[in-house]
Length: 114
Length: 111
Image 1: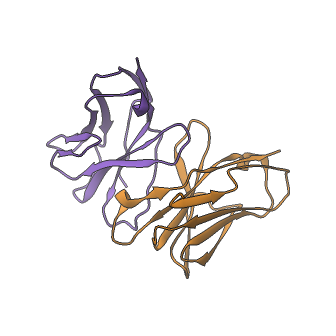
Image 2: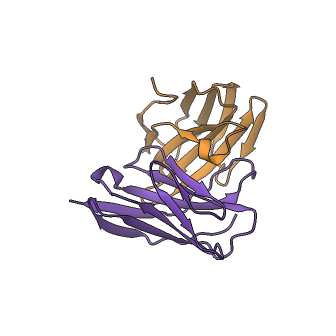
């Protein structure tokens, strides 16, 4: 099983719908992140959480919300999806002690908003 | 975090060394150079990092100039599986663990 699991892998949804992307990890890491990647571009940070009670906005948080249900679970929600949120979404984890070379990424969720 | 400049794309021949440049002329004394790569829409994968000295691991070598304003990632014997986007990232080691990705270099390894 993958260390960082994202569900669903692919999703097509309609404009205005609420959608949740889920991420779970078995790494035992305390830090979790959500990134978005648009075609041909690098990843951009949406939200991050350094522990269960800590939630922080990244550079592009508008239109998104997150929930850290447990140390191992970090969900990303689009309250009312819009077409320009069509992108590839990645969850990542890291540990306080391992610095940025300790990032582990999930396989991604490809979201299409029509 | 210091800004980095990488060529948008480059080709290299299978079995040859691939040398990927990165300019970071505004790098600060406490900032490290990190390299990640992303293979065809998979999650990015850590390759190597360094501060001042050259570094080598099982994946690659990192050469940092003496003034630290640029660096080169070397894949010693490129294989087709090395085709990917390579990201050079400069940041302090203890800056909250947040990674910021630029556009990267799209490397195509050709047979």
